[in-house]
Image 1 (cartoon, rainbow, N blue to C red):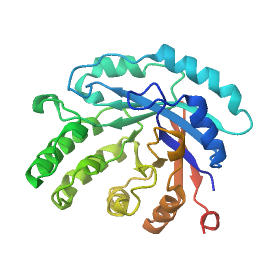
Image 2 (image 1 turned 60 degrees about the horizontal axis):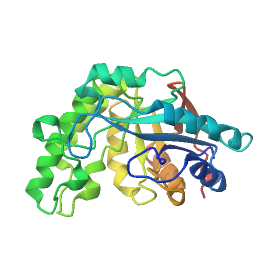
Image 3 (image 1 turned 180 degrees about the vertical axis):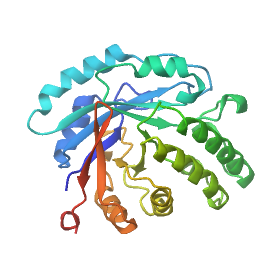
Image 4 (image 1 turned 90 degrees about the vertical axis):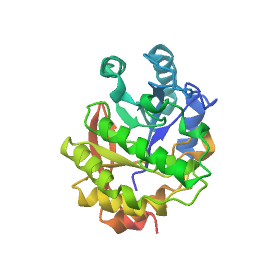
Length: 269
């Protein structure tokens, strides 16, 4: 099976301290064919303050230093996780105007600017009312993002649920999610199945079913690993789920163009 982790973070993300070289070494040990580093570039920081640029100098320096160590063992791709790109098209276009860039995840990690912009991680989600308030805002932002060109795949659609301790479901949101998915599919974009380092697999089944029913075809795999031990977490189970739902391929990207690789049943049994 052609396994590729297209959502990982290095020391250039605010929430990781791991050099890219160590992430690449872990990917080789896990038997991955490709690794894409997608460090954070959120146009809102964790406190809701505006961000206008990304440190491409450091990102390219780290990437170019690591590529030679992977020759013959791993394809290393240069990506970016761009958060809230829709709130500042000029900044987003400038950040993404790099010929070296292979892949862009479009994500929403924060409340919208009109709701204060706080990172979901720092909000108290112990009450259902607060959870649904967050989800209302989240899917409104995701709908805005889906109508732009600032992503190749939409990142971790169920992301806010990670932080919610109150009992909530997505039942009231499927209509809005379908509209988001149709917008992405119509633009030739994809979504990721984010395993959260192997912690979330089964939760993706209804999401994938809706993506399929909305005409979606492109799915990437991402562990969201911020340290070596999370690389490729849960990927074989994720491939089994994809095939169960009706998908036959996973996608990788080079220079913002998707390439499909067939899921082979015998490889994960």
